[in-house]
Length: 137
Image 1 (cartoon, one colour):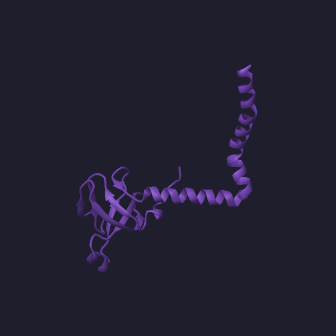
Image 2 (cartoon, helix red, strand yellow):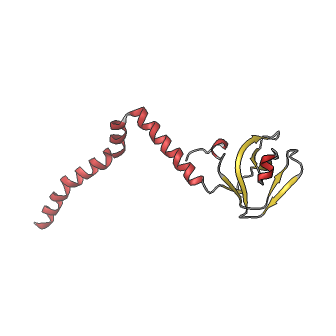
Image 3 (cartoon, helix red, strand yellow):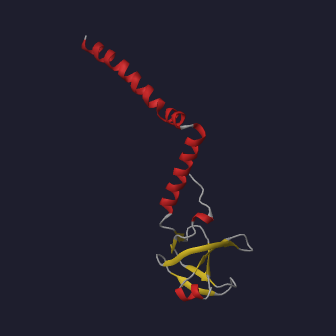
């Protein structure tokens, strides 16, 4: 399974899966609370807090964006949802496959991937007629 890093979440929408608080720039005051299923916003950036936690930077309103008044959502596993996550994972998988093909070469990659199936089909093609012929006798 690919590892999703924080930078891959930037520019993707964030939703609350449980009750979540958005903090102001002091990281002490609650700017807004979100209920489960509620849209939080598009992730503008992220930072690492003094406690080592990741905080997602979002602007709750256009006015907040215009006034550089960001809010921060602490990343707590299981409390947030990113609907674009399947697409992000697919992109990572595609990049991994492309890197593997570039490293091994196209022919080597596909031979390594499909050779067992080809050999299996050939063995069945050779053995199956003999088995059927033996059963008819």
